Length: 181
Image 1 (tube, rainbow, N blue to C red):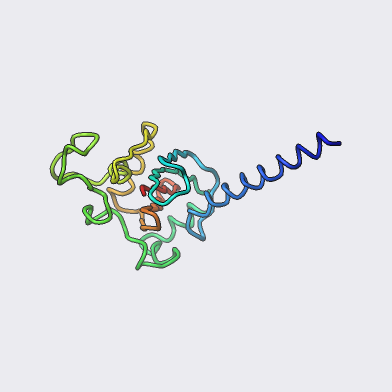
Image 2: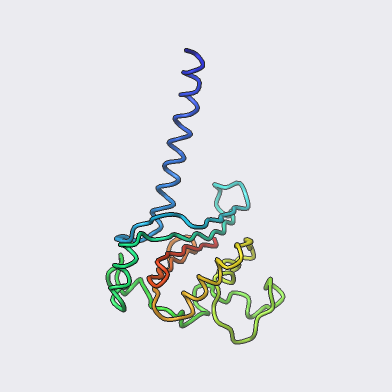
């Protein structure tokens, strides 16, 4: 009986925390879109993990349900109007002014970049994530999908709290969430 009570005392709070973290993970996808699965997730933190000034960088790829992806595709150029905050928050791709909001943070200081880039170059998700100098090793191919989403027409992006950007890609039926803060 004592063993069962001990397992409950430890297990129940653990499961509650896991459920809460999963709900927070899914809450990053804007309504009315629905997630079928988290396809890829890499999030790292440098520091204590809960203190001001800690550095965090993350990249998450969500696969939408078939119905949700189809709904997003059917909205076409009106998709930004249909997402929370409307067209004032959701911008059509390609990212036009890449020098705003940290897409090219180190162009003025090439020695800070982790890779050499041409003087005039398109924005990339890796460069966005590197804006404070804390890079993460995104699995090969995951970044190029997100890059295609932000560099071509058909997707929408929105900046959020904590240095985040959400990219809705109806063509691929995905949502990309990236943050560096």
